[in-house]
Length: 190
Image 1 (cartoon, rainbow, N blue to C red):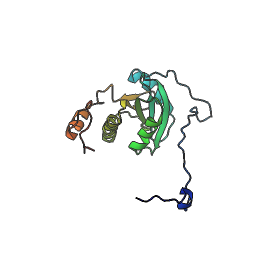
Image 2 (image 1 turned 90 degrees about the vertical axis):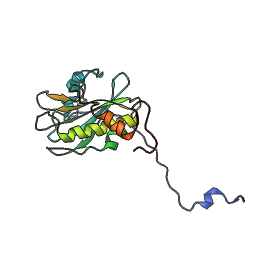
Image 3 (image 1 turned 135 degrees about the horizontal axis):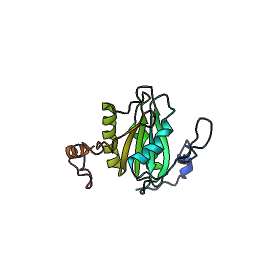
Image 4 (image 1 turned 45 degrees about the vertical axis):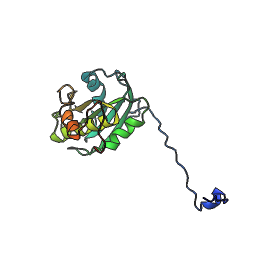
């Protein structure tokens, strides 16, 4: 094996700048520019979470999907709007949901929520399907999906946790993959 005596700088003909990812947080502001404050920062149950978070989507004329990143004690660490859609729906991308959660220091769980501009809080079949995908993705990433909340009008909301729909079907998904939720996935299972 021969060793090159050519200096590294003369071997490379082009230079590429190295970029550093920097995550910064700023206060959430309303339409008038005022800092938004919440009645609580601890979300111990679905009703508390819904009462605190749904007003953040109350003025939206289109469907918006957002996440609240939570600490191990269910304290709010960060709020992130993932997508804005139309009056009847919005696209939900798993990376757009989970990248902020993974990059927010201290995040162990999350609450996802979206609004229905119609005011009706009943989940659509797409809402149920997205929730199942979110559950499986959270499980793979080692995060807790505490709830999926749909915000309606006049303070109405729908909580997948309260309705007993969070976790429903997840065991079947995991079993079909041949894994156990606490023991991990077998090799080759996507």
